[in-house]
Image (cartoon, rainbow, N blue to C red):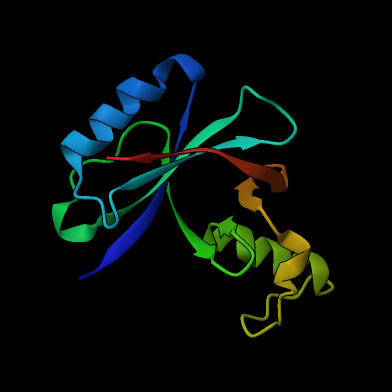
Amino acid sequence: MKTQLVCTFVRKNQIDQTINKITENFKLLNGKIFLLKSSQSDNELILSYNIVLDSRKDFLPGSILVHRKKETNTIYTINALNELIVNINNGILDKKYPIEWERYQDTMMLKKSSGLNLIKTEVVKIYSV
């Protein structure tokens, strides 16, 4: 069974409605949805959940496919990881470059047009659905 970690960015007043849409449209791997917030801003909210790919329909607006390093709870896109490596490896993309994951504990890594965006996150609530 193939799964994919998805993050959906939401506003506070959209959390319940978005969770309903997630549960209507996807089969969740563990029946849990994690609500994360940025440590820098209470307005940056993220719902994180694992879907079974067989059940995939169109993703919800504001959603991205991500990966997670479990040991450090680091969420990242492949493009962001590549950008990180280029930044710390003197401009060279080496896909075997060792990452010090502990430096990115509880961080979401995103690639923006302006470069790498590191967002410190914390779990606000875990929904069992």
